[in-house]
Image 1 (cartoon, rainbow, N blue to C red):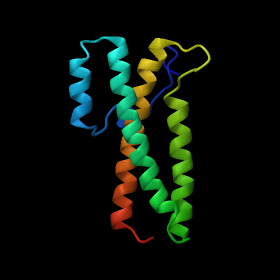
Image 2: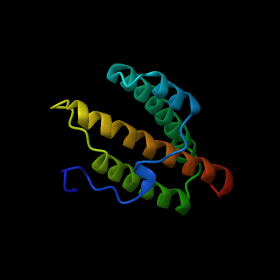
Image 3: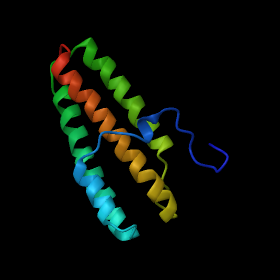
Image 4: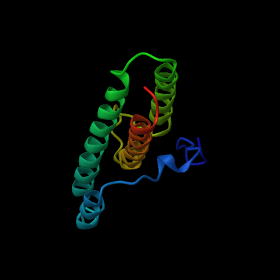
Amino acid sequence: MDADGNPYRPDDSYSRANLRPQYRQCVAASGADISALRACMDEEFQRQDERLRLAWGAIANGPDSSFKDRLADEQHIYMRDTYQKCHYDPITKDQNQLIAAQPCLTNRYANRSAALEALMHNAPM
């Protein structure tokens, strides 16, 4: 945790990703309205979640190999770290916490999707 009690994020994969231009346009058009901003974030997260599921699914459904086993372990650790460091407590439903956690999750999903997609095209399966 940092001085403000937020989870420490060790690299910029939590705060930066190559997100869709539509997301940036949506955020700009939101006028900082929290409901509109959350709708933008929810839509982008859903897109990145789908992308991650498709990429991981393609790899997971491939033939068994030591490569796939190592990647499954890596995937588990990546997702565990994502949920630990992009923390949101659904019990308290703290709005500020959600506004901080959602982009973190979206960035991590987008970055992992890009890495898995590259592996699908460049690595033996």
